Length: 124
Image 1 (cartoon, helix red, strand yellow):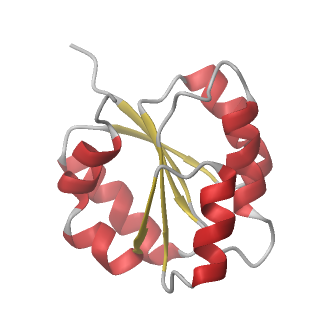
Image 2 (cartoon, rainbow, N blue to C red):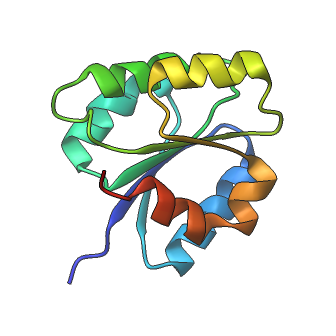
């Protein structure tokens, strides 16, 4: 049986690498994406079960990459868990508009990853 694939978009080593390790511990295959502009294209080719994205980047607008993912007919169904150190109201609004399924702090995602995966993957 093939393990489910998770795409992880991150720039900062922590918590990005820790998240990759935790996903692998939960029997996910993991592919990392460094450039938010490539997120939709990568997701269309790789066909992940979900995307986890650090919403804060010093180089790029991550929410723009998520918005492209959600506007693509082939990838709009993919749930996105967004995380950041500080989920300000402004960031929450931009993330919601982009199509983030679930928004959590980077500390919470590391401590409660299995529960967040279950929540994001629920079929409505």
